Image 1 (cartoon, rainbow, N blue to C red):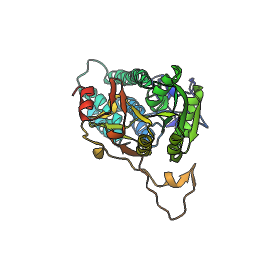
Image 2: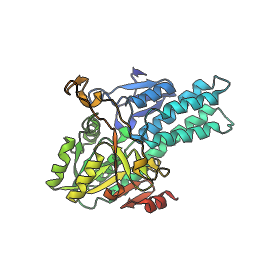
Image 3: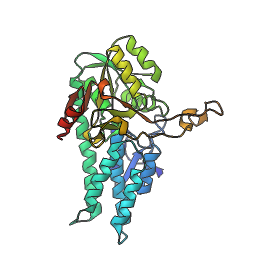
Image 4: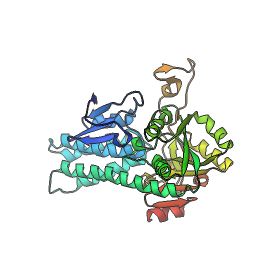
Length: 351
């Protein structure tokens, strides 16, 4: 990966860019201080960008991986057994992050196409598929924005967690897409964004997106959310998901579960917005979702400087699981599931 200057205004809806037949990613680790694009040269670069959090957010990871397959195929097509080599690249990309199911969904779709006999250059066919995945995600986000906004029936403030906007998707956003649409329709007064430890996606990324859209945003520590709900004026908690189980349990950024518990106690409604590519009907419940754990230094350090006591250890799960019983609505591009359970999820997914 290398930092480059490209003729493009850095914004949330252009975090993943295929331009001049190359892949560029807005380096989200540097936001909001710097707006820098990295050129992704090959499949290995793409896997590292996903692992190292250059790009994050389940839909964005899937889209990036799809373009990564294109880059990998271009290199492999120089070999006689190119498809065998490409399958190794698919496995490498799949190993980059274990929880977000969109990654595996996109790789399965790209791998299935690569395995089919082609009447044209396989790399061209794969590029068309990656672009289709990207475009479909944007369209799904727009649809979710409309469906989710319609649930907000009175002018209110909302809480969100982590980042679910254009930076985390192909554009517009999932939960933040709902918020953007609801704001445009006059349904939202202001947004309270949890800072989202330890990577601070809320304070660094969500606040960056909302301020650019001139949507009032107030950043607060993750632990302040329950106290804010207790003061009143919060109608909804709105956030995304990295994987939704067949029974409606939701895996999302660590801290989501505690938000759901606090919301239920305070009578605040809880909405999850995610595309159907995030729904994993092969996983019966949240207990079966693999939860990624990252290094202790992410918790014990801040901005590269250790803040935790020497000798202390840290537990750093990236995600937690919120039971379906605590969720009021799951919003996908196919529709809204109220009080989700296994039967309602199966009906929405057509199974």
